[in-house]
Length: 292
Image (tube, rainbow, N blue to C red; front, side):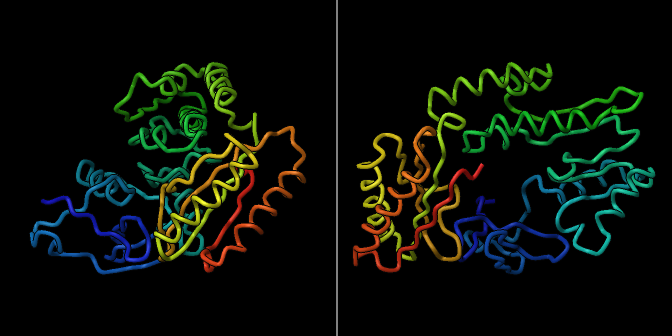
């Protein structure tokens, strides 16, 4: 195969195949299209779905273990009334042998006789472009580990990773919360991330990418004149187009000791100056303070 991946027509994201509907879905704008049988890029009829979604894992497990009962816990399987509760009840009452789920399985659920948990592709957590990625990875993996063997019997947790020497993986295995905290707090202090600053995200959006580039750079320069080196960007966010609007991101690491009203006044003055520029008519700005 050529490796072609269907993309959303409105957003800069790949479409996700949903077996229940037989369609490809965009999880950002809701766009849907029928699954392709012939590759539009190379014309091949050998089209395959690749990935590790819950539906795909369920299919593989049913091939490996045809005689056991498998259930799936995700947004699709819990849309029906009482769907979530029924899945959880069946698993608790041992009517289900294997439960496949997204991160929602790890949060707040407690089962008897749970003695084996598998975490697939933990590297996606560790490699997420966010300064809290390691903290969140430790939190989630520690939560998952805590679900196994909570009663009398000892449980086992298997974590799939290409980087078994990663310090977070080792800290989870050793239940080393203090080590994780010390590493993270030192790094955040060095690079002025919370709790040593207040994070302010500015998103600049426009339907024309060239107008957006000019607008975002202009806004960033105004901000840098006020906040100096505490301003990062403009850069493309992880998803750089949603609903046909291109997006640029500017980050301010505001001094936590500066009065918030002073920061607000500086931002208000900046946006007033920016919006007065007729070249940027139709440019949207969005501010998100302390999104964490």
